[in-house]
Image (cartoon, rainbow, N blue to C red):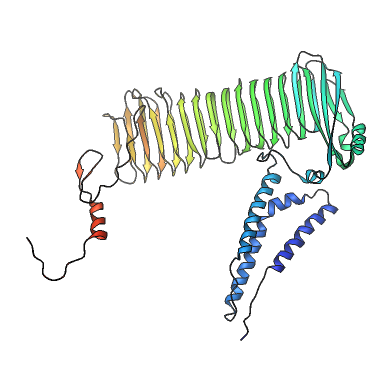
Amino acid sequence: MSVYTYRRGSIFWALVLIAVGAIFLWQNFNPDVHPWKIIAQYWPILIIFWGLSKLIDYLQAQSRPESIAPPLFSGSEVVMLVLILVLGTIISKIVLHPGWQGWGWHVDDDEIANLFMNSFTYDRTFSQPLKAGSVLILEDQRGPVEVHGGDTSSVDVAIKESIRADDESAAKRLSDRLKFDLVDEGGHYVLRTNRRSLPDDGDRVSLDLNMHVPQAISDQITSVRGDIAVDGVRGDQTLFTQHGDVRATNVEGLVKIHKAGGSTEVRGVKGSVELDGRGNDIEIADVTDTVTVHGEYGGDLQFHNIGQTFRFESQRTSMTAQKLTGRLDMEVGSLDLNGIDGPFEIKTSQKDVTVSEFKHSLQISDSNSQITLQTSTPPTHDIEVDSKNGGVELSIPPSSNFQIEATSRHGDVECDFSGPGLKVSKEGNEPSITGAYGKGGPMIRINTEYGSIRILQSGSQPPKPPEPPAPPGKSQRTRNGVAAPPYASLFFHQRHYAAPRPRGKIRWN
């Protein structure tokens, strides 16, 4: 009897090749199409349709009892699946998140095409008088930019051209065609180049600009690709980069940054800072006025010594802090704040929150995470905590005075403080701590579900973990020091290690 076998796979992979070829063919008719971005965004569909084809194979094999069912995955298919997952993830990281610095470089369609060309560099300088208090505008920059303020009455630019071409003669022709012009438009000086008029829309040319300008100047810099650094200037700074890091130091004025990737460093600003977009690491320190951060940032975020209001907004976290005299470190799953003189408010999820050395009111809402609060000074303002599926621990000095309403649904409570006005209830499904301690004081409200609440005195030690079960036949000391029989150990011993029951007569002595 012949055995019917059914195999799919060659058709599936043929369709994949047809689809990929169609995407790249589409780009030839529509330059706005970016095949690598499409692949980076939709590559998981490949696994979905592959799984559907496997499901169809299985169902058809079940409907034909005489056939041999194909294996779910062969060894080669497992290897292919792993390769697809790894390559798809790498492509997504590079193309969809251009600020990702895992390899220290960025990739797009233009760079992939230019990889097969040689790189040539040329140096030139450019200088022109510039009035103090003017606005310097750089548009459509491709390459890193450094701006240094100093005691000068002109703008002095050192330019390093990086040109990709087939040979040196072709690169030299492009360099000769490249022009620079600083145009005065009513106090606004615009530095323009004709890069976009060169072949391939000027994408083969990258300009590294090192500029020395008068100290009293405002900058507006727009960079398509490249890092931006501004140092030692007095005036508002507006910095925009699509692919690159931004660094602003020793600035007097407003610093506005918009970015689509890379890291951000801002230090020593006598004024305010506004940051929006997306990227990786952030470090903002020593700012006399307000700091506002809005967007999605996946790296290590550090903020310290902010004189006025600090605001942070993302999809998961909304936060406001006043007078951040200490340091705030934030990552994907944690937030650690140490030292704040003003009110602190945060609403987040799946992020462990730790606040130390606070001197004003706290308002915290979190879910699926631990909340830990500690201060060495008695609280003088209200504390409000709302947690879902997470524990709350508050540590305050023994000399504190407070009122409290704390409830843990389906959890437990613990309190180091005791007094006639304080009631601790550990019974039922809603253990609670209510009342007042000392001479009134601020209100402490804590609510949590499926988590414990601990009100500790500063300097107290956490309870010791329970001792391991004692060996069979020996007593086990409880937490209060009272000997108790190890029932669980005896039960386990009798059930699993009892001697066989004797047969015949039993003689008792």
